[in-house]
Image 1 (tube, protein in one colour):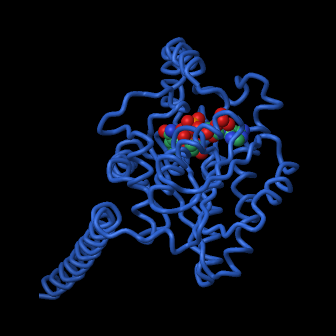
Image 2 (cartoon, rainbow, N blue to C red; image 1 turned 180 degrees about the vertical axis):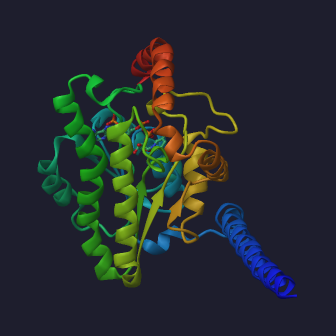
Length: 328
Ligand SMILES: NC(=O)c1ccc[n+]([C@@H]2O[C@H](COP(=O)([O-])OP(=O)(O)OC[C@H]3O[C@@H](n4cnc5c(N)ncnc54)[C@H](OP(=O)(O)O)[C@@H]3O)[C@@H](O)[C@H]2O)c1
């Protein structure tokens, strides 16, 4: 009799734990689906009016790829644009195109973000007097455009510092420059472009992956610190977008064009402060986290396979890099 009572008590406890677990996961998945629906579907219908943040948007790395697409999309949505990049010629040509196509004002700032802290006083001067509502910290680089072990990076002494300056110092210093004005007006949006390569540690892209997780953490901390003061800091974590950085890999359902990516990603402003930018990339992130989790990416077996893969595709990538260089 005692045995039977003990057994039914045990099943009751197990049933309760089972039911609570099922309810917990159902609620969690329902919330995730609703959140995804809001961020990637509803946002296509109702969008935040970006002009409410202020008159000017500043975009770093604005002459090609994702940065240029953000600059054009922001101009299309009614903002005047400050374009920042290395090449004066490209800056002037993109500025001219934006002015004639979207009838917005532009300013250009020529600078090289690999140079470190010395460049920011000149940028401060050139931004003076502008009502900056939006900053897009887009500029970013990898070491050489192919996968490589840390010590195999050519000219590592210089290259490592350049990648860190370009990918992390630019984000922190540019945010420092625009935040005081935004705080005065109690309004502002900072968009920081991180990368899916930061979602988990990424061997063979070690410095790139590490700088991008810096961008992610910095964005989330900054958002928490300044949200109550009217500032939004959004971290965008793209998968693959067809740009010079990705050797202009052809667009397909998994690979977005810069224009379509920037449009989708800007739609998510006001819905979330951490986003893959578009539905296709969010689904890829979800699938990858299940089939290729961090522990597997970091296993010796996987790293060896990546080395083999990198060696096999390197000649092809170098050809594409040479082609891209010729075109730009
Ligand atoms: N493409 C992707 O699949 C992908 C995926 C995840 C994250 N991301 C991130 O998205 C951002 C943009 O990438 P992208 O693919 O659009 O790159 P991209 O096509 O190579 O464009 C880079 C832009 O930055 C400028 N630039 C490069 N180095 C610079 C420097 N040292 N100083 C000033 N400007 C510089 C370039 O113009 P100039 O040559 O005229 O200076 C260009 O306008 C990066 O932060 C990247 O890490 C890209």
